[in-house]
Length: 261
View 1 (cartoon, rainbow, N blue to C red):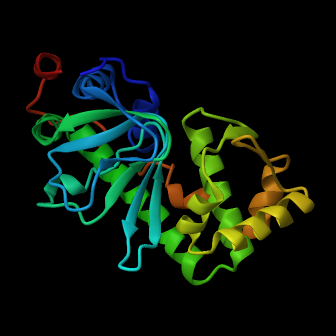
View 2 (cartoon, helix red, strand yellow; view 1 turned 90 degrees about the vertical axis):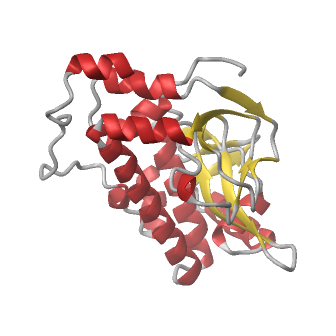
C-alpha cells in the first residue's frame, strides 16, 4: 500500500447523483485507503483476470478496452479521477475486457467484500453506486450512437465535448483542460482511423472550435462546439429524483454507521 490519501473526486462524483453526509463520505474514503501506482500504458486489470478488487481512479486517466482477433483495439470508456473502473465487474468470474492506465495512475484497490459491507450498511451509498453505474451506461449508449449514426466530425466533437464536460464536473478544468490522449486513443474510442480523426481535429481548429497542443485542449466557445455535434449533457442525469428517499435505513442509527465507517 503506497498511501492512504484519496482525492475528493470520488466524493464529488457520487454527490452528483446522490447527496452524502459526513459519515457516508468517511466510509468511502476509508474503503479507498489501499492506493497503488500503475505506470502509463500498463493494464490495471487484464482481460480474463479474476476481479478480486474494485478499482477507483485517484489520479490520472484510464480506459476500458478490448483487443480483437486481428490485433485491433476498441476503447469503450475513459475513466477520469473519481471514476470506478469496474463497479459492475465485481460479480464476474473473469473480466471480459481490460482496463488500461492511459497515464501514470494512482489507483485505489477496494476489496469486493468492502463494497458489499458498505452497500448493506448504507442504502444511500448503495443507491449512489447504482446511479453512478446508470450514468456510465448512459455514456456508453452515446458512444454507440457515435459509432453507428453520427458522422466522423460529430463523433469526434461529441467525444471532446463529453470529456470536457466530465472534467468540469470534477473540477479538473474550465475552458482549458489536460487531454492526455493520442489520436490513436481518440480513433479507437470513436471507431475511426487515426488519419480520419486527425482530419476532423484539423477541421475543428480551422473553424475555431478547439485548440490542441502539448496535451492540452482549449475550447474557446463551448456552446459552439456543442452545437456543432448536438451535444446535450442531459444524459448525465444530474437532476436527482424526488421519488427516492435520501435518508438511511431506519434500523441503522448514526452511531451504528459511525462505528462501521
